[in-house]
Length: 214
Image (cartoon, rainbow, N blue to C red):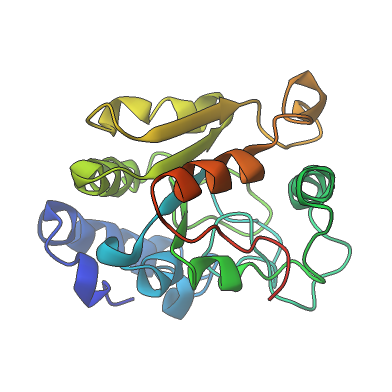
């Protein structure tokens, strides 16, 4: 569980991570995702390449699903988790297609940071590590990424609670209900976040995100 080199300057890694790592090693060695994938989102998307941030809550608690990127799953996972299924339904309405499986690493390759506010969870226990200390990392990542205009996608009240750590007025900050089955019909469906982000990126002179085709 080695912090990615491009993010190591964040105070979290010197001040908070050593104790958190000991806690995980001693009390939760079976955490998900496994140690080598805990920082996968930060490893895939360095600060200088980040154009879009999608903030999740915690990893999928089903063994074999989570691989370190919020909302993404390993390519052989079927059926898809219900939140991801709803994301794909909205994506299909918005963009006319969706990826062939639940692996969203190709989004990360284009500068989409898919970060959970807790980077670990216990098998079968959603939210088990919500208070472990990972939130400090999320706060610092958002603050660090406020240095230039970026798009931030905050689904649900939990993610929106971190909006205060985004500084500046030139970002695109999209909020809507969470895509979970409990809230998707309260405003997530029909929100068209993917086209809104691409319209904003285009207006900023950047290449749109290919959301649909790996």
